[in-house]
Image (cartoon, rainbow over all chains, first blue to last red; front, side, top):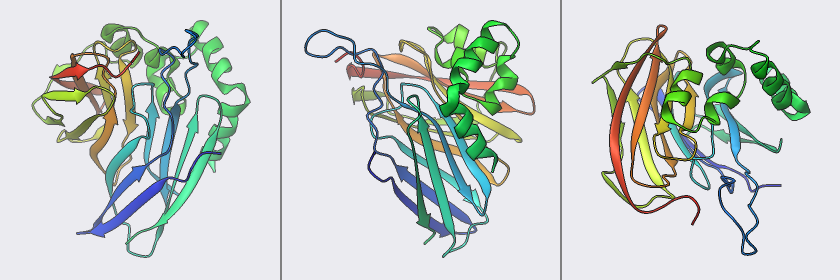
Length: 103
Length: 156
């Protein structure tokens, strides 16, 4: 199981700024190991963030997102003390969901 | 919730089903995008094929898209790219890297209530033009910027 995401959500001026740091290799499938064998691709394909049951951002990713992906966005309406959930699914079907409280 | 179902489908062979349907020409890429990971677009080996698979065969150059990215990236493995769209009705924002082995890096759906602005970090195999593609009210808008790379992000 992968490490938890680090999620920071801060309410300011009627919008919530969300910064997410995920822990994932984001292997492209282009690289070879020491023995010259290709390293299979292993990367996050889908990300979604929800607040009060509403999707506030969803993303589809390819292999060009950097290792340990970073994502920042802003949505309107969230208030301090409310929670947001962030989920990802990778190309091997592994998934992870983490929750954060809006500050 | 729908998202759970989508994930379940994905895990349970959704990808292969998609490939089958895409191969049979049942799914149109532009309509499939919202529902599932657009395999055709993400596996496209060049910019034109990626744009076509996204349904963005024709695009309008726009000064209303602001891309924040370094002119020179010392390390192609971690290049911060931010995109802000000032185009009304922005529905999605995609990032494409012309000279990567596969051009499409990311496609963000922007629901109403979410600001049409995202920041992330991408990999560049070599010095390349980076494109931000915005879909708004059924039309596609694009801007580009060259990012010079001194150490490649792939194959290293």
